[in-house]
Image (cartoon, rainbow, N blue to C red; front, side, top):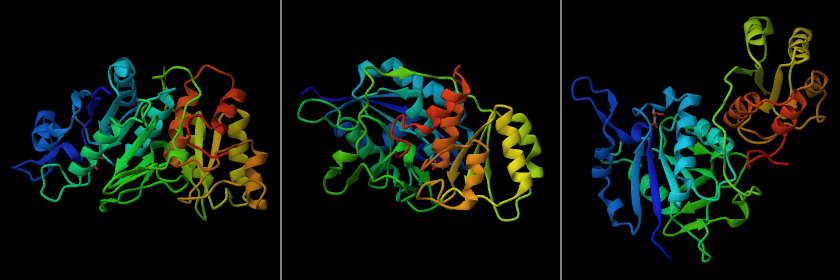
Length: 340
Ligand code: ASP
């Protein structure tokens, strides 16, 4: 078998940062320094090329246009590489991973996002292990020469997760991510153990690229005492809203909430109901308090994470198709993002 070709795409984030000697704040540095900081990469029997997307940024600055640039870079270079590793800040990594999973469907190669909680230049960094193992996985093939991983994933602190199932759950632990509704795809110990039955396999014959996303969306997290009138401008200005409801998809029995939601769907707005719990699913019909969502015509987001829901809504809203089809796509499993 030929030695693997892996493309490293550097977008920014803590992994590629150093302390500014004057202010002490973390600032991005040139990607070449990252390579110098991980000489171990040279030991791989891999060809590793590097690409940067614009200026390195903190992932809080990520925009749909950045997702589009990353997706296009991968799509354009898809046939030249066996796998792709995206170095990315952890803060919005789960959004980027989810967005890329919709924008690049039909892939049969690994696209792995990784980053770190401590800059790679620091002695206790988690960045080296994350980067080295992500690169290793990006080049891994089965005995037939096919990539083992054929989807967008996040590798962080010894675990490989499906990207669109993941959320950042800790601002300071190295184990910063969680996949509450889907098993880990692999764990790295002395060996890297995959769970083959959980790996995604596309039914599409070739990769497709979609770069348009419509950000006329909002998220409303319900809470006891919510006064929906305070959200009037959101209902006026958006085309889609993710509602983070209670438990199995429940909401208060509140006349003004129901009116706001039904007026919104009546004028063509899309409501996507997900649970604010970090695991479990919206389960309509279970409680009387979730019937409101059926009455107002909300889409059941089942066990989508908020990150996967927001980006799926942006993806669907950007498509030039009728609203019934948009709703159908939202409820359907496109690339492993929801169960059932
Ligand atoms: N603020 C940083 C970012 O998301 C944190 C990190 O890299 O983990 O870009």
